[in-house]
Length: 371
Ligand SMILES: [Zn+2]
Image (tube, helix red, strand yellow):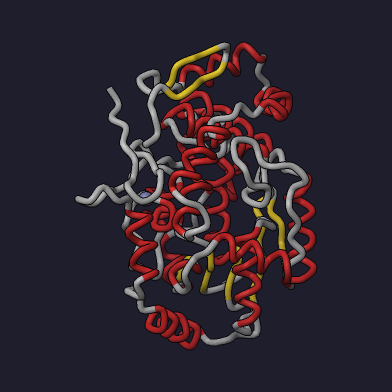
C-alpha cells in the first residue's frame, strides 16, 4: 500500500518524487521557505558570488548570459531582473508542442521588452515520437520538451560562447524534492540529467525508436570538454533572490506585457501560471493519477507558503479543483500522439495508483482524505 501523509505546514503529499520531510513532518519546501522568512539565507553573500562570477567572465562584446524564456511570468521576471542588472543577455525559447495561445502572445510581448531573442524548434517529429513513448512507458508526456530546455540551452551557451545561463527557480528546492541544489550556485550536466531529465538519456530513447541521431541535435548536451573550455556556469535566479511566483506575476504584468489567460487553468483556481503548452495540463493530470496530487495542490502549497491563504482554505480549493480531467484539450492530445480515445484512456488508466485513487462515473477520485 502507498503511504499517504501531508506536510504539516503546507499540503504537499508524501508521494511527491524526491520530497523530504523533517522530524516535525514539514516538507523541504516549507523548511526552505521558513529559512528564508527567518533571514537564514545570506542573500548579500550569494549576490557577491554572482558579481564575482560576472567579473571573472568579464563583459564581452557578445552576450554575457543566456536567459531561457517561455513568456511565462517567471522567465519574464528573470529577464527583467537581468536587464536591471545591466547584463547583455540572449533570451532563448524552446518552442513547445501544443502551445496555448496566451503563452505565445505573452512570449511576443516579453521579447518586445526584453531584447535579443532566438527561438529553437527541435525536430518536431522526433520530439513527438519521444513524447508518445515517454507518455506510454513512463507517464511523462512533457519530458521530451523539458529535456530539450536543458540540453539545448547548454548547447546554445557553448555555440555562442556565452559563459553563464540563468534559469528561473530551482523547483526541487522551492516546491519540494531533492535538496541537492539548495545551497549550490551552479549545476552540471550530471545534475541536470538526474534532476530535470529524471535520469533518462534522450539519445538512448531516440535510438530505441529508430530516430536518426542527427535529428537529435538539440537533445544532446555539449561535450564535457566544450563545457569546461567555456567555463560555463548554469544557475537559477532563485539562488540569488527570495523566489516569489506571485511577485514575478505582478512584475511581469507591469513591465513585460504579461497577460492572464481569460479562463482559469484546468485543475486549479488561477489563470496566470504555466500557460506555455497544453501538454502541461496533461502532465499535471498524470501527476494526479500517479501520485494523488494535482495542479491545484501545487498552487495551494505556494500560496500557503507565501501566507496568502490558510491551510484550511487550501484544503477546500484542493477538494474543488485538484485532478480535473483536461477535457478541452483531449482532441489536441489524440491528434498529437496519433492515438484513438480508447488507446489514450487505456494509457492514462495504466498510470493510476489504485492504492490511492478509485474510479467513479468514469473519473478518478482520491480515496484518501486531505488533512
Ligand atoms: Zn510543506
